[in-house]
Amino acid sequence: AQSVTQPDIHITVSEGASLELRCNYSYGATPYLFWYVQSPGQGLQLLLKYFSGDTLVQGIKGFEAEFKRSQSSFNLRKPSVHWSDAAEYFCAVGARGKLIFGQGTELSVKP
Amino acid sequence: NAGVMQNPRHLVRRRGQEARLRCSPMKGHSHVYWYRQLPEEGLKFMVYLQKENIIDESGMPKERFSAEFPKEGPSILRIQQVVRGDSAAYFCASSQETGLNYEQYFGPGTRLTVT
Image 1 (cartoon, rainbow over the protein chains, first blue to last red):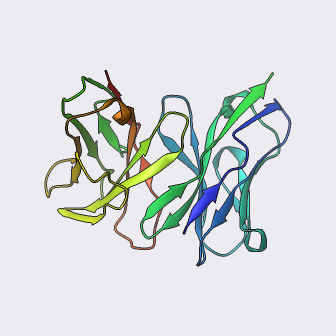
Image 2: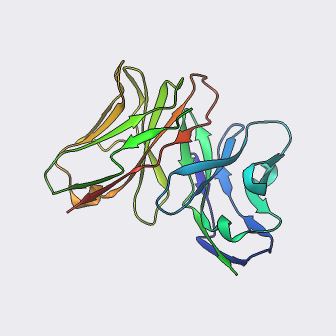
């Protein structure tokens, strides 16, 4: 069965530090992978997506993610975090028209 | 171009009442999806609809929940005889009519509170 695991429930980083949020997926075929961000009380905004091709994908707000088939991972990275990046981040895999989400990682940013 | 619109943004119902949540997809989008986010959890798929058709309702509870997307007007998620456990944020998403394009755009959600 398809599934997505985000091992880290909560991460705190200092402003200006680098960030990596982990995501592992389970899917039989070539996956369609997504990262979304959710600010408190808001809907979800798409950060980036992977369908095929280059395994390093660039997204909005300076985020990038790398697809590693051998590790079944799609980790999200940002070289320098800003205070406005504090939010909850969801990794998802597309499966027959629906999205299967991980549990989310809440990011806190220290000044 | 307006995004996905949901109303109401907040809804309070007493146990046993009915809740109706509305979703207007982005212009040009004919696929609608409903997801539920329980407190401290990720989003769970509920139902996938096209105009006048339910494509996948594998995530819908068997009782009290129904969804429709009529030819004209918004998609409606209906919850009859609400219980406290229905309290959650309900998100609608829409996508274009391309089968392999899973890029879904989300609305701001409806936060349902059952008292």
